[in-house]
Image (cartoon, rainbow, N blue to C red; front, side, top):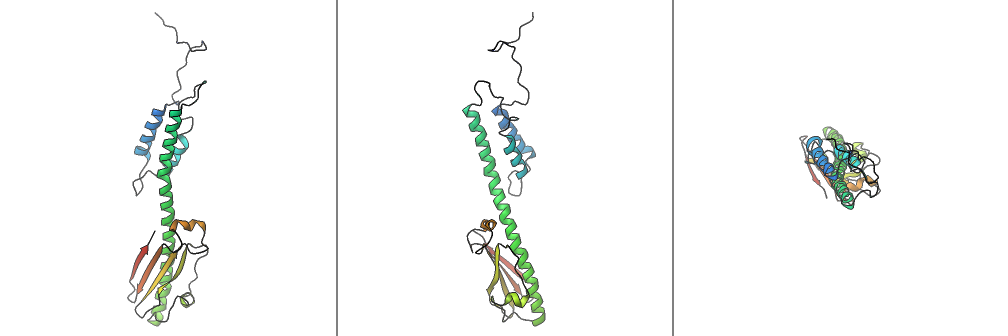
Length: 208
């Protein structure tokens, strides 16, 4: 015996929902699987930024949300769940972005200090001392020129001595670009590189 198709309120046969119209439960499951399977964790154990961005773009779209009802649209619970997932994604992505930007700025300071170390070592090879080198004259003495648009101010931690010299980079100096704010307030971050007369060096840093 054949059964008649179910009728909708409008009187027409009810069509099954397409496979891509997933419920909020499906959205949550996909989110978890994406993080566990394709969200290759970074060094800090969090999902990769690429996956986080893709999920943030897909979560509120029509591909991962339930088909709207003609008479009601999304329910409040569905909207709250989507917003909560987006909040989680943002909470994971923003610290990674800020941390990566600060790491890049620290590398910038280290690279310039290594350049300054090479110049100071060349000076020592010629004069066998750093005595007389001060914060006021080290740039002209070594032939050093600080890069433009820098996030670090380069100076000496102490006047040069016979057996060593201490090079210092101080973060976020006055007039630095806005991106340098990742290093904290002016002078909060610093890197010190001590160069010794045997060619060895020792690095210390202070970060907020």
